[in-house]
Image (cartoon, rainbow, N blue to C red; front, side, top):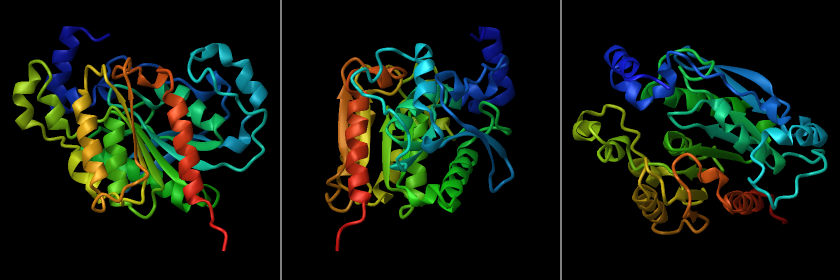
Amino acid sequence: MSTTREILSNVFRHGQAYLVYPSAFETRPREVTRPSELGLAYSNLQLTTADGAILHCYMLLQARQSASRINQKARNDFPHIDADFEPPVNYNTPAVATVIMFHGNGMNYGDFIYSAKRFVMRHCNVLMLSYRGYGDSHGVPSEKGIRLDAQAALDHVTTDSELSNTPIILFGTSLGGAVAIDLASRNPSAITALIIENTFESLPRVVRAWPVIGAFSFLCFQKWNSAAKVPNIPPTTPILMLSGTKDEVVPKKHMETLREISRKRGDGSAQSDRFETFPEGSHADTFICPGYWVKIGAFLELVTSLSAPQPP
């Protein structure tokens, strides 16, 4: 936990970027959790962005997983998440999708391993991206830079002979949802579907409600304007929105506004979108709420069925 003195020192040194991307400037960075702690097989993937930043990511291929190894590490998991789901006995079937995961501003990519495991157990490949300055990645975060980071992750998937043959789904929470929306809006033909959780309309709009710094929201140079970018996502791209109604950081009205904007895509023809609420979900723990992974599982089935080749 940072002291007040450390916080003020970091604000003086890094300016507004420290308030927007705090985990990238920790004086004592947290250890990054490895997928192997949950029994997940993975490789360390290094990506180079268009501007030369070096990113360290986790790549989890579902075909390389071992059900017995995952079961052996079950004690390290949240016991009540996805409790009604029956894990697969093997991973011999082809992957149904590839999920690119975008974490929140106060997280690092290792914090996503519990969610990554749920996607793997549903036979998805998972690429866990670490933004520049976060986790083991180099550089200093900014909106411009993180947009390049996300593009590098997508480019890796679309140019890989194995991954590119699966539906590509973007998953993001909080800031990560804004990253996913931005990426999908710039690559409309490459993205199959989006899943976003507790995401804001734009950064200045959500900052406006925060204590103290809210009065200076007009000075916020990091925009992440999701409300302006959602209309650029094709209505044929399904979006699942997951909203914790007790979110104390991003008020639920932000997700509700994004839902209304999303519904208007293609003059209201976005028929495959889903909006799910979780009454006990706060900003950081919606993913452990009852029914959360049931909704995601049903959405994955919908997306993969829509992507499956149609009989002649």
